[in-house]
Length: 109
Ligand code: HEC
Image 1: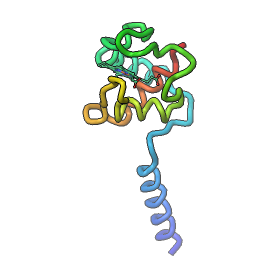
Image 2: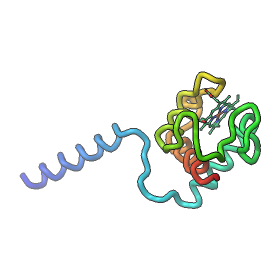
Image 3: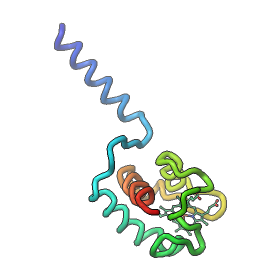
Image 4: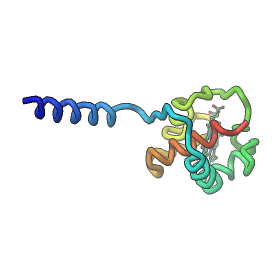
């Protein structure tokens, strides 16, 4: 009986984990930031500038973001886009790639 309970509890935890929005509570590893940086160079630099200081899209090194500088807000921006010309990348990026991009952006100042 104990074993079944443990299995059910584990399965439940696993499912709840999947249902949660992308979140990372630990400090991002340098690797994730590096990956975010190369994704940024390929997909975002054209509009936000190679150094992320802005071009067609806004400067991403500033402290105040129009839509919020939280991880959740940045991930949302990347996933769904924003009305002022920010395209949605949700269909072409995996969740962990979006997390890496957010890590990279949050590491900029
Ligand atoms: C076609 C040009 C374009 C591309 C490509 C682009 N962006 Fe944007 N981005 C914009 C524009 C324009 C805005 C401003 C949207 C608004 O104000 O509604 C923006 C807004 C944002 C914001 C919100 C800034 C704020 O002040 O809240 C973030 C974060 C962002 N972009 C990240 C990215 C990332 C990461 C990528 C690459 C995956 C990317 N962008 C690719 C044009 C672009």
